[in-house]
Amino acid sequence: MTNKPNILIIYTGGTIGMVKDYKTNALKAFDFSEIVQNIPELQQLNCNIKSISFKEPIDSSNMNTQYYIDIVEIIESNYTKFDGFVILTGSDTMSYISSAVSFMLENLQKPIIFTGSQLPIGDIRTDAKENLITSIAIASVRKQHQPLIKEVCLYFEYKLYRANRTTKISAEHFEAFASMNYPALAESGVHLKFNEALLFKPTEKDKPLIVRKNLISDVVILKLFPGITKATVEAILSIQNLKGVILESYGSGNAPNETWFIDLLKKAIAKEIKVVNVTQCSGGSVILGHYDTSVKLKKIGVISGLDITTESAVAKLMYLLNEDLSLEMFKYHFQKSLRGEITKK
Ligand code: ASP
Image (cartoon, rainbow, N blue to C red; front, side, top):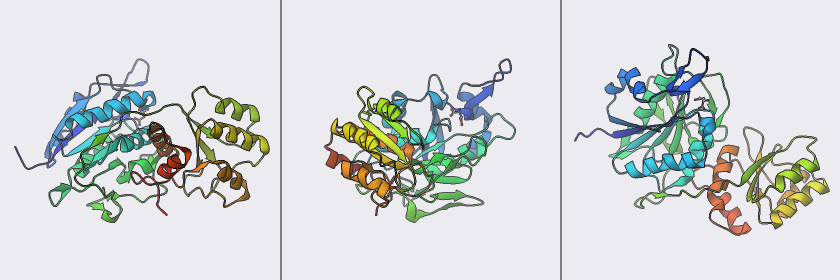
């Protein structure tokens, strides 16, 4: 036994571990053991590293809630043996996956760092090595014999973010993520600089980890656009078994105040479908009632998502729907910051 932190890398797939199939020119996943071989520098880090891999690594576009459960079960069964976790996934849905994992793990006291890359690890210009090495270094940081980070984060291109605040903003640039409504938790330059005041501080220090595995997938994102028809909205809101809607509205939560639109939402809410209003803007907050075009939404029971991202709203909706809450209680919990995903007023 050494005093070095023990870090577990969980490889689920994504570009970071991909190679080119030269026959088809497409990228496909390969065996994770090759990743470690590709980065001998990992041995120089001041920690003990173990890794575990999905049997069949996947492109993150193939992720669903069953894979989220697979990830949290790996964390659950290794929680006491390791001091920190680095999860490698594809960047395409990384904000969705990591947001969901943040809600699924209650009373988390250890760092969980999601990362990936825009170029495969074997590429000469890869961003994978820096992302992986620094993520492991961050997961290893301790303060007063405890992990400094006690939340789910996302590290990409020199910045550490709170995962449930992120959005993928570029399919091309190495700087693929942004966190518009919450500053970066740390920046990696010559030194790793943490903004400790911004880190999530769990209120319950001695409570054991609770892993929530029941997510309700009967949700939909209804993105508004000028000219959206009654037939479209009607069809979406009458999806069988629909339990939750993320209404992606304009600006600070505005939507058409035409009667047909409000009536359809009203009908959905009467069927106990929870409707959460999230802005289409990349930054800023929903302020229900600020404009005339959101007064009616507020009146009929649409819930304000405040400054939550769409990715995080989907995850929080899937998580809270399992609790079978009344509209009032659902609203109370949705608008409360559970894992730092919303800015408290
Ligand atoms: N398509 C890949 C994925 O999300 C892209 C990436 O790894 O960044 O799995």
